[in-house]
Length: 188
Image (cartoon, rainbow, N blue to C red; front, side):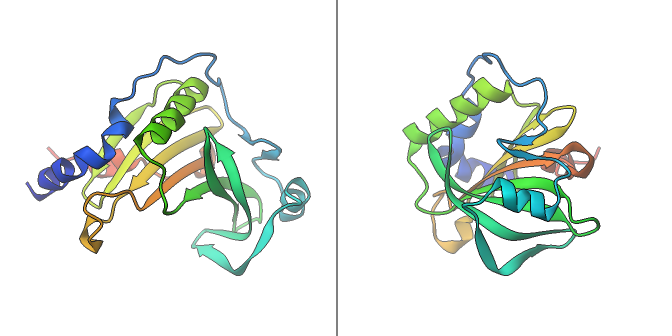
């Protein structure tokens, strides 16, 4: 019941994420990275592909993944993000590309344009869900990658349903985490 109330509370602020249904026009058949980044690149290859990247101090630690550099103001679908290439700690190879947008989050019209752009490039998402922790996710699957768009709303912090973070993750298929939609389905 509590999850249902949270989902209803989030609905007005996050409705744009679910209501948009753009027809896919020339959607990608597969994704092997982003721009000049491809799965499996070494840290040196990533650095060479992103000469404009700045060091993260300290480097970000994501457990099995880490990041040492970031490119600011990378525009995706009309919205500027910070691009963070994430490497597998095990072998130092590129396995995920994180695009992160913190406040100020663009308004509904810009978000609609952004999601329409994703639909045009990626096709319809395989999954959509709202989970109790204040996350709304759209998930696309490709042979070589998984793409997840997550809108974060931490209502407990007094934000009253305002988006606090927008995350777009391109992840190599062999390193893709389980779908948050599957993890939070009620058990029969």
